[in-house]
Length: 333
Image (cartoon, helix red, strand yellow):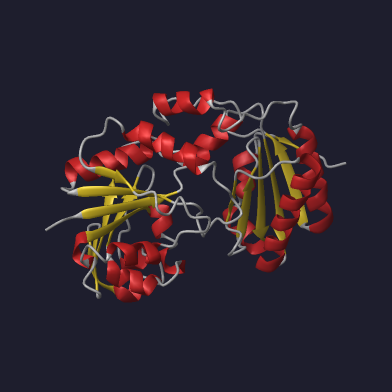
């Protein structure tokens, strides 16, 4: 039987976590073909625009040049000017392959959102799943740890392998590599921090020679001023706004802000307000925004500044301020 692995993503940029996954698929899982499918836009992150398709394709070419096995790059979706949906991708591949031959590869964090995808119940019939995890992630211990929308479709689950009632399977695979994300790589590049051990050296050279992720110099953004401005905004609009200067600690960021909202809707609204104000006044967009749709806990990552906006009872549950008690509390004025 042909076994074809479909591995999609924006690859912005491709990193050693991606290539470690490719190596594992080819060397340890007996796939006859692995297809990389770079996408034009992630439909779950429409407010974040990746770098040019030409640069991402070139970085993929460089990163995969020395990998063994049949690794193919499908450029059809990255050349489109619209978001890519896995349902549409699988419909294309169903013309040449049976569902039992297709395996959709994704990270454990992406799998956690699978029940929010377009036509996800049909997807459960169209393909098998390989869910890749890296430290510190662990595979689910039981069906109750799977995404809520997936659980009714699970016939059995044992030791990282689920049989779905559609006849398809879900297999959790652990890759022994660092916990790397493209967001982390971009953040380190833009804040001038080392990306050693995160990205192929030749990809790094290409990025720096072509200035693909320009670093933010101190002249570009005064993060102390930015933190004060956002802190004042949250003090006026939210509850219990607090901030901490963490520059004396060994952290990836220098400042953090936290505030509470009276509802998930207000948390979403506050996050949008911060995003728009910072863009207007400082010309800066967040590297990532997490949790905005649900609104229980929204995180805006500006590199040297991380902003946390909680639905208030969730903030009390996590008690996040304990992580920063050694930092210097900020006064907004």
